[in-house]
Image 1 (tube, rainbow, N blue to C red):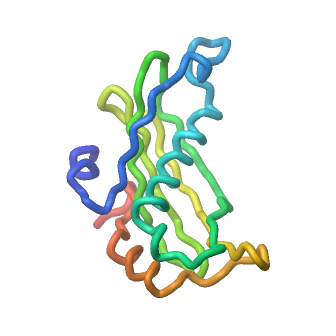
Image 2 (cartoon, helix red, strand yellow):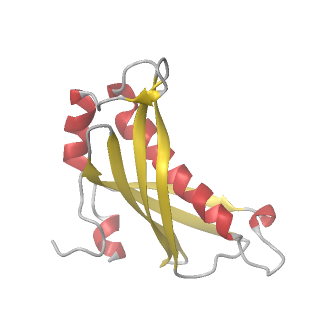
Image 3 (cartoon, rainbow, N blue to C red):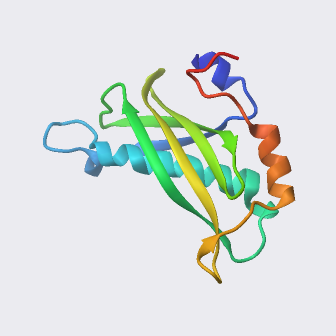
Length: 146
């Protein structure tokens, strides 16, 4: 599974260093940090792949985040997050993500982000340029066939 993702140019990868302050009383990285790692991956994709295709005053908000925890994370350590879109809506994008540490998945996540207009604070349709970019990045979720 990871080899397939590593070799796929549609997947945006980010690297984060785990901090001592990320740990909790049980000695592992707190579950809330997983959400932050997912955010880091989504923001990297927005910035590096979609940023220039958006009009001024457009911004992304997260509407849904579901995380499946598969393994503990520990300090010191590093996490590599892979992010890719799986569904394109009128004003939203659905993403799948994998958080990898020590060569194995520590979590998978699915999120839905909505493009908003700053002036109205309401969802706005994805611009055609953004849609074209996302269409080239679409990849099936990890659990689906094909």
